[in-house]
Length: 195
Ligand SMILES: Nc1ncnc2c1ncn2[C@@H]1O[C@H](COP(=O)(O)OP(=O)(O)OP(=O)(O)O)[C@@H](O)[C@H]1O
Ligand SMILES: [Mg+2]
Image (tube, rainbow, N blue to C red):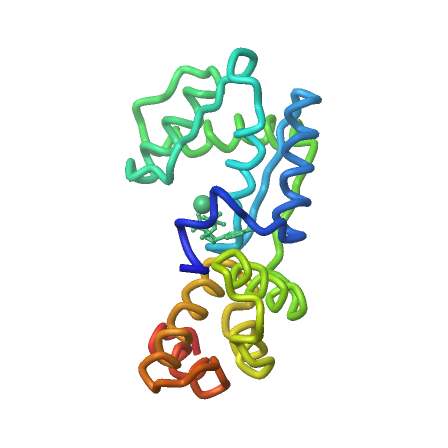
């Protein structure tokens, strides 16, 4: 499969957003600084963090990964206040201002803020071509009009590009077509609800 999980660890495309994010995370680590990396769902935040932390010497660095917690708002506030070294109030009404106060202090210490953007149209094209190449396909499989549609519908977010590309491939296969054209891309967009 050219698009999706099996490839992303081993052969992540060095998309510009990911590379820029990794550079900033590296800088934060080397300077012992706080950084905040943001971006839409599927834009590659986790991929960037993994790439940056995978390169660290495990004997010198501890990585703590907190997945999106299902502890609710109260739990989140509690966690923030406690992690920042304060005694948590048992009243929810008091917890919110407590967290806000602790985070204001934290806010001033954030040295780097970076929002990962989606890929630009030419980058989405390069991304698709690169991943097809990894799977062994070097001649044209996606027509330019299909790539344009996929780029528009995905906003250049890699997860959405992957999903649309796979669906477009399947649509072309179902029609016995040897190329992914605009029609196949449209089917993919409708099926994935990306329009
Ligand atoms: N540079 C890349 N090369 C190959 N695949 C990528 C790349 N960046 C992202 N992907 C693909 O996109 C998917 C989504 O990326 P990721 O999980 O990093 O997004 P996220 O920004 O953390 O999303 P969320 O907000 O949902 O946590 C990955 O699982 C991977 O399949
Ligand atoms: Mg993530």
